[in-house]
Image (cartoon, rainbow, N blue to C red):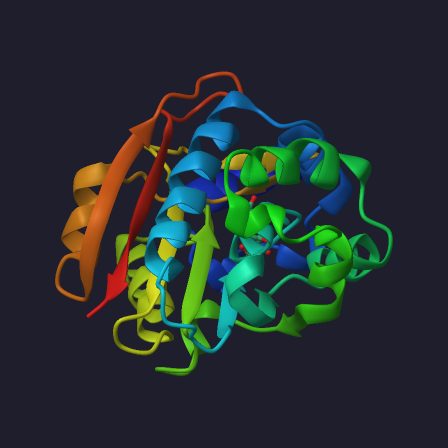
Length: 258
Ligand SMILES: C[S@@+](CC[C@H](N)C(=O)[O-])C[C@H]1O[C@@H](n2cnc3c(N)ncnc32)[C@H](O)[C@@H]1O
């Protein structure tokens, strides 16, 4: 049996977060497959998230810039970019050593698509974003790549947060999906806005030749988990079927911590 088949077998049979080989996460493979270009599903999610944040922060009264967090950043810079106009600091909170190194490298020398495709989509028709002329330079100045575990996040630390494709994509266990989602929301101060994205009914996924676990959830599971701890703005299913096998679209949730 090859390593990847063995990994797949092990991680589909009840793998907890601690069981998966996060330090073997092939960051470059994941980046190229998921973010080498702007996909239609990410473009739809960007519209929802950027409009939500503009709505939250579009006040006539000036307010202090937020301390923001993106949990499980992986090789995705667009959640952090979407928080840029409203944040003085963005913690990129990541368990995997390979992904933290990728983030450090990408902040110094970002791939051109982050600006040409992702930032263009974020800033299009949104003056609050257009005020930032060099978004990747601004991000590099404000981002802190931090080693961390979602299950050990401290409560009430941040004013704004994102967590994309993490809670359901780091474990096969329902209880860990719920705990990761609740810990993320709990890490925010009361009233803070957030956006969280989830894969719908994911069966797990390969990154290169390594298989990673997932918990099969849908929009009703996300709502059940968030409703007691958040005032929900919207939970929406986004069509997506060409990223890989074994999932049924993406889910984007926006709201405020209660
Ligand atoms: C499917 S990837 C999502 C990456 C990225 N947020 C995105 O939007 O594509 C899951 C990420 O969660 C990270 N991760 C796994 N376990 C974690 C934990 N306990 N705490 C924080 N991050 C974790 C992984 O290293 C990986 O970067």
